[in-house]
Every structure is written in structure tokens, then in C-alpha cells.
Length: 123
Image (cartoon, rainbow, N blue to C red):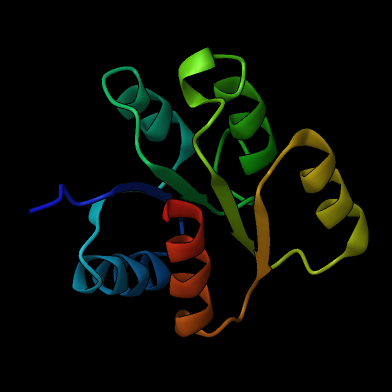
């Protein structure tokens, strides 16, 4: 039996945090769900997830700054990062791609699409 892939999920909107966490668990993933980047950074001191799913607009450190902080460490360089965000503008999307974010999904989105993208990155 293969070990469940782990996902770190950072989302400050409680309803979305709950629904996507449930979706990920129902699809067989191990999930650490947190509401801000500071908590995520604390978790990352002790673990390396297989994928990171993060909102951009977060209290304190935003998703862009969080991404740039973790990518300074070698152990996170190969960890795919998917942004899910309400920022549906080309500048933010282009900036995310420039700094190396793997995927940029705008809200609202279909859960099936999100799971499909996650599966593709974890394959």
C-alpha cells in the first residue's frame, strides 16, 4: 500500500478551508490545513509536504511572500505550489508564474478541476 500524499493547505476563509480540506481527505490525501502563512511556516520547520495549496490574500504574510520564503530552502524547491485566489488579474498571475508558482487557479472554481490539477502535480 502506498503512503498518502501530504498537502499543506493555507486558506483564511473558514468555509473554503473546511470544504476543500474535506475534499482533499475524501480523495485520500493527508492534509495540514492552516489559516495563515505564519502557522504554515511553523509546520514546515518539521515537515516537507508533497504539495502546497495556498491562497494569496492571507493575514500577515501574503501568499507571494510565503512562496518566496520557502523557495529559498532546497528541500522545498521541488514541492509544487498551487495558488487559489480571488485575484483574477493578469499582473498577479504573471508575477506568480515569474517567481515560479506552478499553478494559479482563480476563485470560484470547480472542485473537480482542483483535484485534477493536484493529481497531475503529484503523479
